[in-house]
Image (cartoon, rainbow, N blue to C red; front, side, top):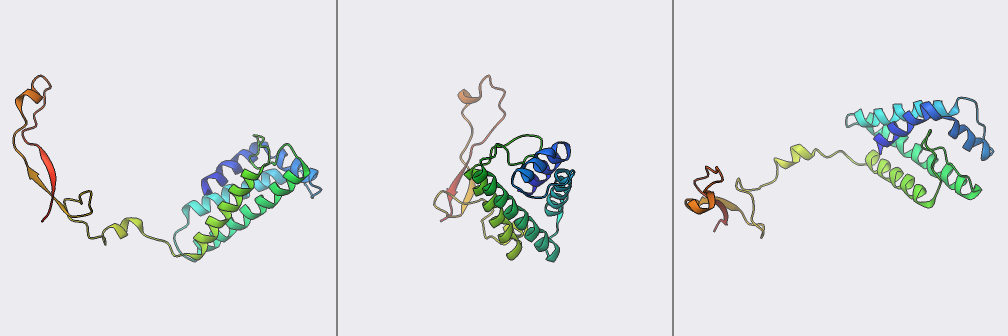
Length: 174
């Protein structure tokens, strides 16, 4: 979602005229360099969202991302209602505004709101708190251990260059 802001913003830096054209067709003020300014804002906001450390700043950036996607949804709805051929969202590449685009923008807005109001989860640190046996678990969720079953039959390794001497399998811990 945030990387999408960076990519679409970068596209507007080279082809920002589509933003100006869309805004003027919707009857909104459209200064000459509005597309490029929007592109710079998207790149900066997307990069800030990707690099923000958990905390108050990240929450503020997430709120800004939510507002931007809400504005995008409003512009796309207006473009659909006006029957425009291009919404200006992707910059140099034209994109026909449609309901799917509105749904994406609203979903991205919702994700950004959720990111702003929830506390971050340390996925890597949280794994150490799980009580998983060293051997893992079997298909029934029980602890498993490794045990040796014996030698690999010569007929299975002949001509393959295999140097395996034992088979390992997992069995439930009683």
